[in-house]
Image (cartoon, rainbow over all chains, first blue to last red):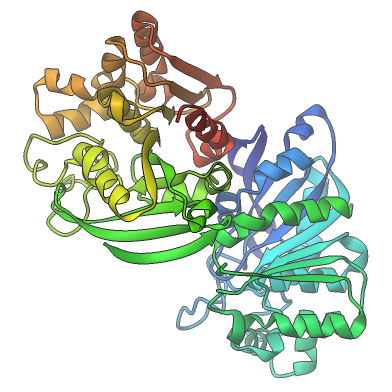
Amino acid sequence: MEPISSNKCFGGWHKRYSHQSSVLNCTMEFAVYLPPVVSEGKSVPVVYWLSGLTCTDENFMQKAGAQRIAAELGVALVAPDTSPRGEGVADDADGAYDLGLGAGFYVNATAEPWARHYQMYDYVVKELPELIEQYFPVTQQRAISGHSMGGHGALTVALQNAGRYSSVTAFSPISNPVDCPWGKKAFSAYLGSDEKLWQEYDASVLMAKGGDVPALVDQGDADNFLREQLKPEALQKAADKSGYPLELRLQPGYDHSYYFIASFIEEHLRFHARHW
Amino acid sequence: MEPISSNKCFGGWHKRYSHQSSVLNCTMEFAVYLPPVVSEGKSVPVVYWLSGLTCTDENFMQKAGAQRIAAELGVALVAPDTSPRGEGVADDADGAYDLGLGAGFYVNATAEPWARHYQMYDYVVKELPELIEQYFPVTQQRAISGHSMGGHGALTVALQNAGRYSSVTAFSPISNPVDCPWGKKAFSAYLGSDEKLWQEYDASVLMAKGGDVPALVDQGDADNFLREQLKPEALQKAADKSGYPLELRLQPGYDHSYYFIASFIEEHLRFHARHW
């Protein structure tokens, strides 16, 4: 693990690192925020943040304003990149923003040419937490959040790993990827034509089966992607069917941007803190 | 004035506009944040934010997290660009980051080829506030803040216009530009060789003459530019000499980044609110 940069922030530290990922077969960068209490020798829980299409580890750390609340609550924040990176990593032939680099969709790819590197599910669920828990003063208390593609990632990861995460929240998640253009494009590329496999990565399909990881979802009603891509109504229907503990809130006037995330990230972090 | 974008944020609105500037002879973009209380028909004071080298109106609005506090205090935020822009606007021949585009230094240029467009002092002091006060529900209560080159801008603008600003704050300002590499390079280009003219734009020279606009300055002690470029000790010496109401704070461990600004912007906005 190689340090890239370090910035003091709200009395704690924002740090970036690179490391060789054996799951993704490439060099990855990630960011971690360590709250001030860490300097006193305390270990803290971790909230993992999964970003949306085109993002890296930097967008959330620079734009969400989450460090202020993490500092107060005494929680670490960890933000991975959104896809494998570097020379030799497959990308969309046309350089589309919604497939390939910056668009890993938090699945384990089974189809070519993606399978060698695009194993973001295992990276986020296993390799990255192992690294974090080995090298940083954190407990094994984990929660997970994300935005858009990362909201899809956070929900599916939490739903498939109930024991590993105490709570999950999402902003504007791609709630039913098997039934929207972004999801169909990505899943058919990464997972091939077996739609049964797609369902393992669909938050609405998974939530309909039930579960007990408390979930909070915020969705802006002025979000351009709401109707065609995000479909929170599918998630609500799934929760209603299975009695899942989902709180879904439609926020009037808010769009898909980080201005929306910044406005409500405090409530999301406090939600996690109530469920450690 | 043409709208570019609009995002709901902390119950208020972040809006970007372009307009034809008659002072700068080009089309300019700026951002304004209107707090929620504006929707109830109230007029609010304005804090102007001047950004540092290479920035546009977007850096502060995306990275400082100021909207949360502005929403609570009921204050508007206005962020101009850092130089004139567009075709025909002079730039440094080598594309240096510290001269020309993105580096207007908030002066009225008198030397060629800069004088036609680089009139950022008049733009910030006169044209932009007139526009804001004409088109937005704001009072004539004004305060001003900035970072690095923009900290220099905020301090010099407030010191030269005591009646127009009720308070001034700065992060990591270029405190004594007549005596540092950034300042000497920019002032000799924009203002020519008459160093007497330079002094009108030097916060330490101006503060030594006295004044009564309350000033708060935060400076990180891990800032790479501290010793060679920023020189807060010159500002402190000037304030000591004239009895100027300056509160200068050295913040241990903090650097020159927006992570530093985000950590203390709340205190700066509350400082302004105490002095309306």
